[in-house]
Image (tube, rainbow, N blue to C red; front, side, top):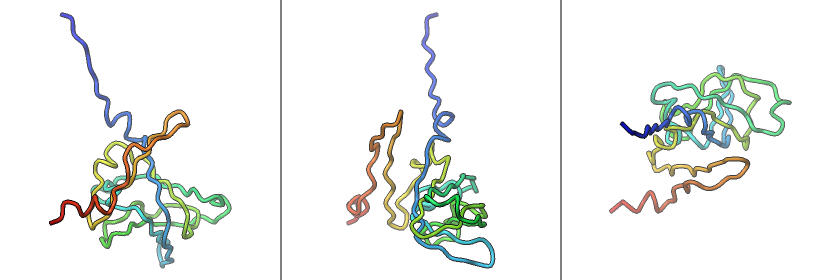
Length: 149
C-alpha cells in the first residue's frame, strides 16, 4: 500500500517559541515581594491564571545587570486577584518603563487571549533568520465595539 504520512507537530514545536513583551507601568513596594504592574496580563496570557503555569520572566532593561535583585510578583491590569503572570521571581529591581520578556508564551498564548474587560488582544510578530513581519495586528477599539448593538 502506498501512503503518505502527515504529521502536525503543533504545540511540541511552538510551545516554547513565543515571547510576550510587556511594559512595567507601576512599581509598588510591599512587606512581601515587590509588585510590578505591567500592561499585559490574564487577557494576553491566560495560562498562569488558569492553571498556575510557570513562565520565565526576564528584565530587558539596559541596566538590569547593575540593579539589585528582588523578589518580584508581576501583575496585570485587570482588577482580578488571578491577574498574575509570575509570583515571587528573583528579578532586577523593576522600574516604571522597563520592558519585561515573558517566555514560553507560544502555542496557545495568543489562541487563549481574550478581549475580556474590553482589553484589545496584542499584535503578533513572527521572527525568523533575523527578519520579522507582522503576523497579526493588535485589536483596535473598533474591533471591540463593532459587534455591539
